[in-house]
Length: 165
Image (cartoon, rainbow, N blue to C red):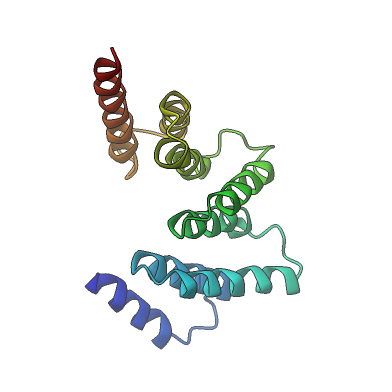
């Protein structure tokens, strides 16, 4: 957590005009999310979205994935329906790039909803596997995370099925 606070302080102290305010707001939102300051995270993501909207730069690369970040905050707040709407919005924005690596996060997050909220493990597993498929190689930082999520859920499913029988 100290690194999150340090990174937030660095971002605040940086007055570099070449840094996009969109990326700054998104970075601050991610830091606040990590610190579990979800309302602050939503405020920063909202500022990023407003900047994109007001400057008419809908094709900014961060625009598409921003909905995923907003969805994740709502997921953490327990507003599953709003989270899912944001995830689906992200997927629709990437429809012409169905194999884009950024979508791995979205599929993972949808899988979390099906695992933790809906308790539909087979569907959650399919979303986790889709996330792993989109990772470019096994050196990617999320590769091990997604692999472990799949293995953990498969174990949970085996334990659940042995208890039911």
